[in-house]
Length: 164
Ligand code: RP5
Image 1: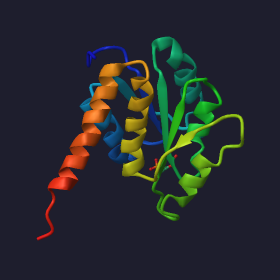
Image 2: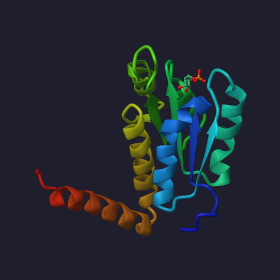
Image 3: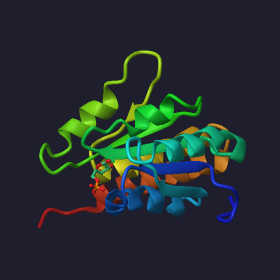
């Protein structure tokens, strides 16, 4: 897969302050050679930007969208409301409630408009990328092979570990 090809995954986050965590999603996609793009687009601060991006995403070749936000984290749900592409949600840690607010806001979608919600913070960012890769891998055997290698490497690392 060419790294300068049109993006297949679009990562949206509610604030630039989210990038420290969401860069792990981008780095994981890069590691697998999956073309992607990331932008700040907030459901409440820049709602039109969200709409413009999401409603043009499929026509531009995007196949999976990731929405990451903290606090009253409605971004992924607002994204999902405006597209038929699969949408993955990453709840980000918040100051006052440590991301429990973000988790519930993202995961508790009423039936009908799903958001596939991952864990809070960095693990969720990495897993959103891996899940996007698994989705793309349905029609791209080379990506599925890379996922298999990734899992095998993780297993080999643990098997090689010694306690003292
Ligand atoms: C949310 O509010 C963002 O996703 C971010 O996690 C949180 C705080 O944003 P900033 O005040 O740091 O811009 O919309």
